[in-house]
Image (cartoon, rainbow, N blue to C red; front, side):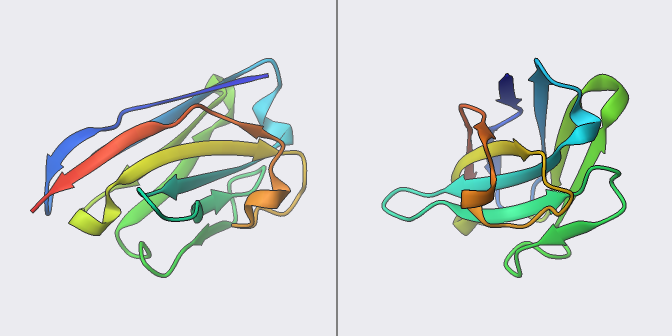
Length: 123
C-alpha cells in the first residue's frame, strides 16, 4: 500500500492550496481517509477526515470553514482544499487511511501513511 501526498508549497497568508493523496495497492472505497499535519516542534494533529462513502466529514476546529476534504474513489485519490491560509497552518501535511467505517481524527486509528507534503504560509 502506498500513499503519495502532493500539492504543498509556499503561499501567502490568505491564499489557497489543494493537496492530493494518491493511493495505490488498495481499493480506496473500503477505507476512511484522514489528513494530519505536524508543525516544527509540535505533535502531529488531525486536520480533517472523510468516511468511506464521503458522506461524513470531520474537521479540527482550527480549520473548520476554511478547509474542505473530499475523495474520488474512482481515481483512488483524496483531496484537501485549503483556503484562507494562515501562517499557523504551516506544517508537513500527511494523508492516512484505515479500513474502519468511522473516520476520526485520532492518528492511532490509521494503518497506512503517506510521506507528507510541506505547506508554508508566509505572513
